[in-house]
Image 1 (spheres, rainbow, N blue to C red):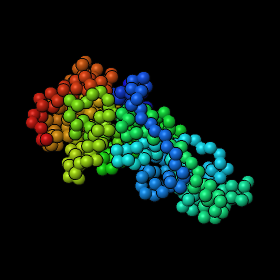
Image 2: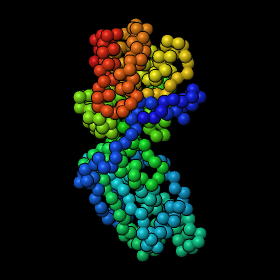
Image 3: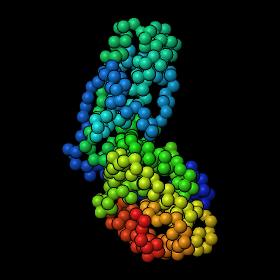
Image 4: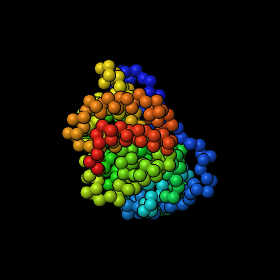
Length: 377
């Protein structure tokens, strides 16, 4: 768990704000059965890989990947290394359930090969006159063949590898800027689900309710939307304590939902954001709700992911007019809940534990039923 004791100056700066109620403690690699980490070894020529990229078999442009950032001199050095037959580092791919290959480590190198083969790159090698300023089409047949026939070594993470293990492997092997787990999920489950997260996290209602406090670069904002979708769509009884698996299941489910079903989910999400902001303004999803409501204190705590879970889903099924009518009673009830020792424990410590998750949802559910009565959905 990330410590929530920060100064007001820190939490008012969205770029620096941390989170509370988010269980980031990972389990050790010793927890994985030895025979379940299915990673196979493949050799592919550059020619084969480029053909598969053009066919859409390799996912080269997921949202989580940075824009193509290698300078042309570095790209040129890579091509020179191939021409000189210098061995290249291995590549890591993750296979999705449809058999497509998602580039985990090696995107810049594969993109360089693709750009050069498409004549989009002119080599910048001033110390090597025979290659400088040339495009692929300018090369003599001998060097063209040498590049296309170059063997690349791939390690492919099988789609059957457990979700948490796949993400842990992502973290371990990626040689570039460290990726967040939501960025990884975004690449593995691209489709209607990830488009939903992107749109929902950019809505004004979401930005207002969260105080624009979530890191967009690391997709922390989309992770929160993902959590809402998971706890709204999936049976809580099926939650077994593995948040990575739970979030992945919701994305799989969303990718199979109809457009109408996703539209209804979007309406619920927007309703929730409006209701939470109506009730708690800039303190929504934070423990500072209590001091703000009872004492008028304006300094706010950091966002609490566990409060988000119960409040975002809980208020998604009540119409705004009912929430507004019961606003004072609801604020008082939420404050009492946030002062209940067992509930506070459930939103603060080991928050991914299945018992803690069920405890906080059970208590929040009781509170909503007592104040607002029958749900709208």
